[in-house]
Image (cartoon, rainbow, N blue to C red; front, side, top):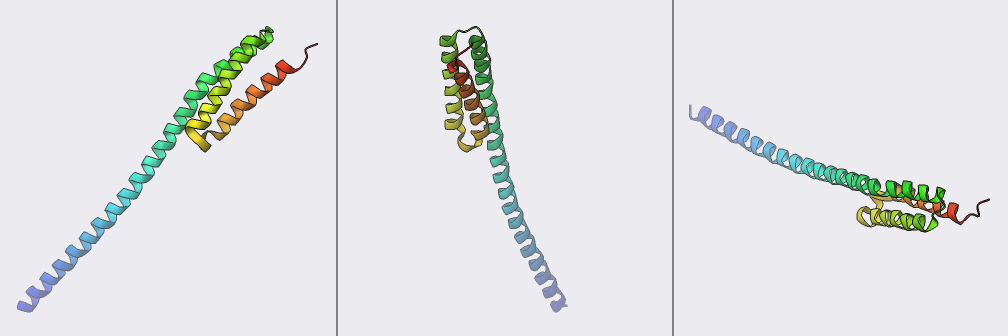
Length: 121
């Protein structure tokens, strides 16, 4: 009888130790998942920041295009300068995450500046 009670107590102790180990494993997994969620949220915020900065820059490009079509090159250069500043802000704020967006914006600014610098016939 004493042997049976001792076996039950040892079994109970082993089950408790196993449960404790499982809880620790789950805590580690939760910590890893929380880290991944935080990184994903940060990436989401970066995407939102890119969108916000592009929403500011795209109208500047449209206004500059209109100014070029009206041959108002002073206004166009000013607007293109502001759009270029938005591209720089994209790069500065978001680093490599903004690469394609900032590159696209700079390319648009460069093309319009080249269009203004090309003699019109």
